[in-house]
Image 1 (cartoon, one colour):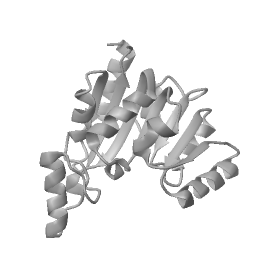
Image 2: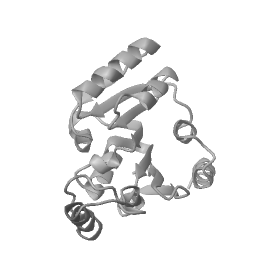
Image 3: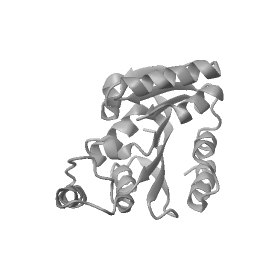
Length: 202
């Protein structure tokens, strides 16, 4: 395990870095790096990555959101590759070999937690980093009986119906079970999991 990553892991655990700074430190700066924003929404973070010199790809199922990303990028004088589709299909919709994958609060839209983690790792180059920030099941307390069943199925059977938020630790577990990543977590926020995973060299 590299000493740089050990230092980053400690910083993530301590919560010392903002979301964008965590990623910047983990990949050794943005300039010239290939970053994919999974479920990019309106592109708040993607635009920052591009402005700092990264080659950015945004995936979102919403063409409306991607249009907003394009406008945001134009206003900042930067560019991004915009891909309309499900973030689960990252390996199908892109050529991979990304230096970093970033997913901010969109994780619960994935079709399966375990499969999504596997596809993220497959889309990274060896040594690439994934930074995930996701609301967890405690984020949604008031639930109908049907919604409660959706959460139970996801927690106990890994079946996702209706986009339930993952239980605490599920994302780290999904990456760790692949056996090909170094993992760091921060659980200081009772409603949020922050996970940093680095793909090991093959």
